[in-house]
Image 1: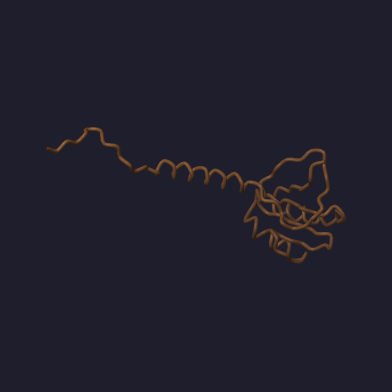
Image 2: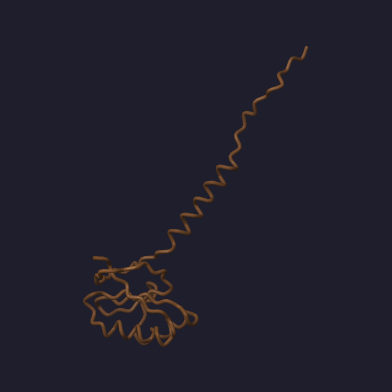
Length: 129
């Protein structure tokens, strides 16, 4: 006599909904963490009373030793315009200046002049007070 119950419990657990949730969380954190990319070069930034967060397109760093870096790549002062032109790719770009507070501002004005001639927006990076 074959007695069997009508209510059978399936011992398998379906993990597809859990993996979907973990994947969505991973994508969310990857997207939100890439909005702010700090410069990896050791530069002592000047402080300001107000500051805002800007999404970086191209980062130009001038160190205390007057070394120029474009996106962490060391270049000479004469090659700066060509490098910015290739990185920006056209008008309406954004250049973030990371200039050491001990560097004379004539170097910042030089970089800003090149960026504005390429029709790029110029932002000076500072640290909040």
